[in-house]
Length: 363
Ligand SMILES: NC(=O)c1ccc[n+]([C@@H]2O[C@H](COP(=O)([O-])OP(=O)(O)OC[C@H]3O[C@@H](n4cnc5c(N)ncnc54)[C@H](O)[C@@H]3O)[C@@H](O)[C@H]2O)c1
Image (cartoon, rainbow, N blue to C red; front, side, top):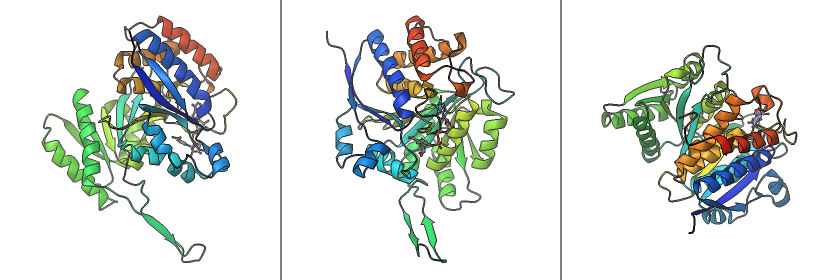
């Protein structure tokens, strides 16, 4: 009998991206053995090092090469010496746009065994999803610089919000909220940003009329950030523009214990193109090469890839495995207050995977 085989593009990238990828692939292989599917790995060394050698973050036909794969697993890109806008605009943003990965889904969930840095949050007291619009908004190429180096120098950066782009992101968030607890919070700033944000709010209200059972709230982004700290338990699903979602989810990662845990999925929900799964964190040059990187964000991103591939039982088993290690052992990397290396966490995860049953630790 042949089993389904998924062709996965693997882009470890830079710094700790190369360290957290092997544990994730190891867990994916184990999941495949247990749940009856396989992977064909297609490795790409596209990174800042590749840029230093070739002058580009990926080859001219990079998108065509990735299009041959079913999904993409990414570590992190960016390294001192290469400006961050070069690494971001040379690799991640072209992939997100070419493949219409217009949703960036980021679960913010306090795993068992992890204490939030927030004093009043009980175990399991944070569990929400941020839906970030991922193709337009504030991250746009529209604008320019004039009079470079002169006293009258000017920089103009324009945001692009389209009815099409905002509507599809909001519809995704509405659908997700309807499958969860039916509460949707929108991040806005329509008091200060007087064109795009009232437009954002109007579209939400129009769509909201079609979903009367949904509880929809609008928050100014500054107040919303404060509530992440003061009352994170109130949220179910949050929908945000590209920039707001980006900033909020780093804060979200911090309140669930470490940016090293948080995962992210760049989704093409229709499955017309590959989606891309990556941890929220960057290449962490301050700890790279020292065995200190927490692999949990990458493993959680791998579990989101399994969900997207239709292997939700296997995806749940990976998250349960993480919860098991955190709850039952003290094997954790320094960002979580432990002393274990990346490899020791990887070994603990592999051992725990064998014991975790379909009975959810978490769900
Ligand atoms: N998607 C991406 O590839 C991505 C995302 C963010 C930043 N970056 C790039 O990464 C580089 C570094 O950026 P930064 O320092 O602002 O953010 P970062 O996420 O790399 O690091 C921020 C802090 O968190 C720690 N940290 C991050 N991930 C960790 C992990 N898995 N385990 C333990 N500690 C971890 C780091 O040591 C550092 O102190 C920059 O070049 C930036 O552009 C890339």
